[in-house]
Length: 80
Image (cartoon, rainbow, N blue to C red):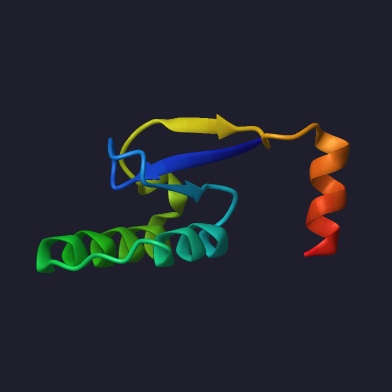
């Protein structure tokens, strides 16, 4: 079970991993805003994670479990 934060908060769009700064940056890179306000919020979030870690992202932390049984999910991930 991993811990994530929803980005942008409340949209249920992208789950950003909170395990480390690196994984949070990878998650934030998945967000592709098309308006300047979205780009600004992404840049602010990126800088905040760089300076303070993923805990700075707004919203509550949620857990995520794979949709398949754990052993089947791990076999699938090894094949990728």
